[in-house]
Length: 477
Image (cartoon, rainbow, N blue to C red; front, side, top):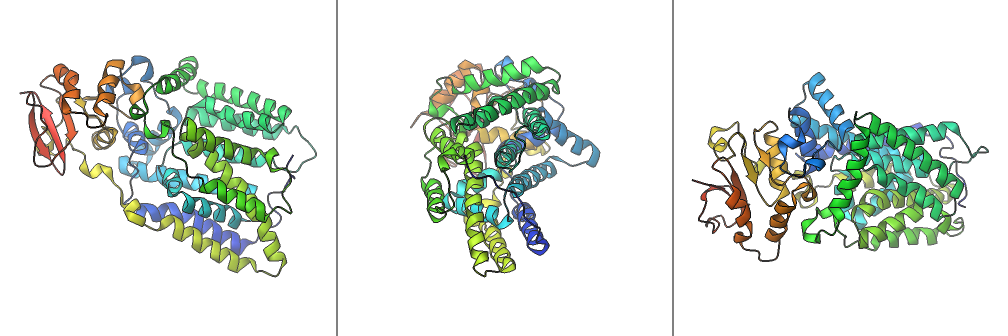
């Protein structure tokens, strides 16, 4: 079992203030470059300011069209109604609040904030996609923060192994994650990891707290059985034999870089004098397990679970190394300045324009008369084989009186529509793969495709209009 640690020895207020400034100002600096996430944060904000349910927005399987993040939408809707924030302001809140939550969630479990910051810097440099992931403004970061708190709390030094306040925190945290994010079944990865490292009694207590919390979170939705069962059935449908090309990117296996694990191993070697039985550390076990499952099954196992756990374990190793550095005569304030500078430069540097991203600039806006005629008529359907079309168009038109055949996840589609969608994604697939959709289209519907900016798609059954820069909108005469 790993050596228990006490999270904080003493507070060095100048260094701590510098750290909080670096961590909390990073989200706002990213937003200052005009950044908008390309996916779910847009549809969460649009859903909050709109007045329609998912079955009025999407064409899909009826049993799947329920609100999977009711708590998050309730918060955003409250901000919209009380403060008058529009969809763009809500997206800024999502990015800033959730990124700040993740960055701060690791602080209580390290002795110095520099350890947590430097650990994140190493992982962000090793795999830049990790930084972009935590800047997506999606409520899975609430679950990631909860995982950090659970892993950190299991290392607290105490003479009382059964602490009621800790169990209450686990229960309430699981309820919040279930209500805000959903995917309650994934929370069981935490007790599973404790069981893997031999801490069976603690794993059982944590599992009971999580299951009770999941029920409590589901009760907050007003339809607990439908919510809990629907989440599970949705996951089974999303992964149930669908071809990789038909899955959302994060639900497919990922080509994980080995560098994060190599960095963790190097830190372990540097700290080998203090390291005791690393294979019994739950954080390291979850980091490695998440990497493996992300490589062979679903990328999200590493992005949402393995990465936060590995970052926390690496921070503990950096903590010990900084002990040696300061004991040898190093000064805390210069160390804090260096860590602050490295973290700020790593996270806010606008490499390759990553913080200038805004997919909504290409979306059609029904408030513009010239673009309104290119969108479906009331009661119509917008057909497209790219989820980007849904995110941008729904964000610009949260109350647009039409539905989308492809929404925020292909698993929501009807089986027939999903077959058309996956056929259209095949290598060198001709436009004729979309023939079943075109046969169903009415004059109220539209088909939006990317293609050659100078030549319309070879689908003569539709009348085509070019919309900049490389998109075409087709309609039946």
